Image (cartoon, rainbow, N blue to C red; front, side, top):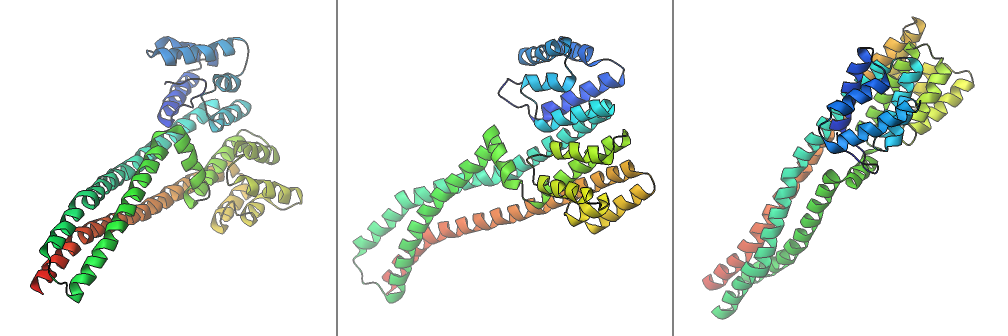
Length: 347
């Protein structure tokens, strides 16, 4: 686990940290001693220094969530979930759930990198080929044709004109491919790029399903710990502040204040579908609201995975189309001038 006060830890590092801490809590070891043990066992100097800073804050009597906040390298979602775990007395379960969540997020980012790396590399390669054809190969064809000194047939003139146009289209397309490849690499290789990607995906169906899964999971933890429904919903609003689900949660709480049952208010606000709201209603009627919420969290996570797979599939199809167009432009840029020469010679 590496980090500084200005660099947020990656999902893989967060997953390992939460898992280690959950094992310590499960064994009955306090937060101060747990962080101290992790710091002693840390081999990386940056990791050891980070854990020592957290340990020092804990020794001053601060809570675990405040100590983690002081480090400046943990995301808000983790900090708020840890705070909820402390309030509800279910810190072990929260840390274990966070470990699973960040492990899935790390696997997701790796899948996205694999899906984009090959097309980005191909885009750069094709762009280089385009530029070589435009700057080196096509001028040779034009020079040879002019040296032949033969009259062009209408077909030859049309082919040559189309070949000239494709030459300029190929040059523009090459620049576009280079810029696109650079943008994709920036998205997946830098923290600012990943933040931009998160904003781009915030309104997509997979992101909304993930937000619903987070909401249901947090509600399940708080309801199972005996918190009142109103208080649990208020804390979930704070947890999901800044996400696409936040306005719906605010509207849902307003409807509940007006006397509308939670399951119906959640459906009317678009937080859950009719089937999901029905499952939730049954859970509240039978006194198993936390179990119903946990089931909704699982179903929403499955929905998010499915929607993401569909989105990636469409993205891959789009990349295949782009690559096919690239190959077509390569052939047009080279073959049409050659066909024009052959047609002129034959005429």
